[in-house]
Length: 558
Image (cartoon, rainbow, N blue to C red):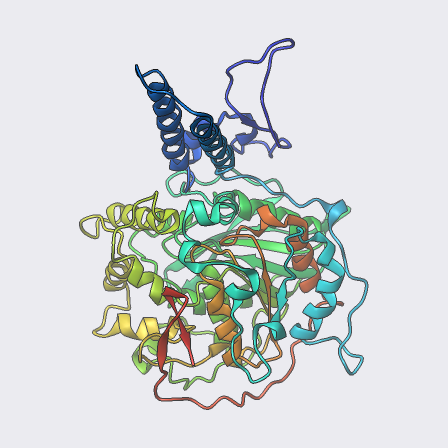
């Protein structure tokens, strides 16, 4: 909670402070930092909201006071009431903005619910969709009351297979989801799990019980990670290993990554916090090896899974991704199950990717994708235009991250264009052939875009997959997910759509529900079981994409 620090008998002017449990030794003690100092330390994504709203409220209050002191100006009761209401509203917004810092949301073991049993229609372990229905019913009390029931997989489509109108169901106006006025709760949840610091020259502080490891994915190229083994009586146990992926251009400095890795390890899972090529310590060791935005990194994950399963005490592997890396996690499920001749992978691209053993199953403990950006190419288009922070905090902050990367890597003049950054990074990688960017985007495509090649890749997933999304996501709109399930009939792929949580801010919105989902989904005995599935999908040469009548910023396929 937030508490005003006060002397014994009088209020003081000390800033608001955050009270948390003490973090592990060596980790920045955010709990003891004032809000201004916290911003300087972490530079979180939405910290500028403090300044903007603070200026706004001072202008509002100062303007009212100045007007009331003007000679000959009388202030009637209606105007006085309006002034009071304006100040109260602005004060409430400013108080909410005090929450816009990266925060720690550790597991609280005594508040997690472990479902005792689950079974499918035939009495065996259920498919992902069956499992979610049963497990959500047990975990439903952990979801904050909102007046709207969460939507599960089958709720996202109508009886004739069309996507439901998610915004209509949750009474959301997509035209305002990116604004503080229309979606402050979603932006707050997003900000509390987000930061823009990086750990490249200086590694992230050590995590107790974790070892830094290097995994060779190609000759001369390794990626870094932090591996923590679950133990009993001081000795490692045989358990599944869950791999956590960073968000776009992120690394292991993120508090969320540390919290989840430690929580899952304490719950009986081995955990590996991975840093991609061009991220964190991999960037420090191989500064000339660029990031390929999941085109090279997805096959790398197959190698990571194989590397883990060769280690003692590791049984199966699982995967969790957030935002852009949630797309990577979904692509990993597709990559594991697709045919070598899949038309979404050009021959030239395939021969440059990391080879792996296609005869074995990867991440068979399951894949969880939190807030995937399925229509990421729509986001690429929107990032071509500069966005002010006050107008669109998410896109403005994302453009700042992109510009910082371009400047750091000396690609060219700083720009907020993610398309330019992708082209820059591809040009300095092994994917530097003519047409590589187009081939790469086809490989990454998870939703229809214009008339370019597309297929519902999740139809080929042969491991359990769970998508967690929110109706008030300010970046990746919920309707995209509903449309995905209009095209995806694979029983191995399930989804829960919550009323709140913003963009992957579920640890802030419903921590106990999120973490309970994690531990139950990956449970070796009571989690979902992969089901052999033969897709009835027939590849189409062209997809007709039309604009959604409710919002020009996202599209809907029919």
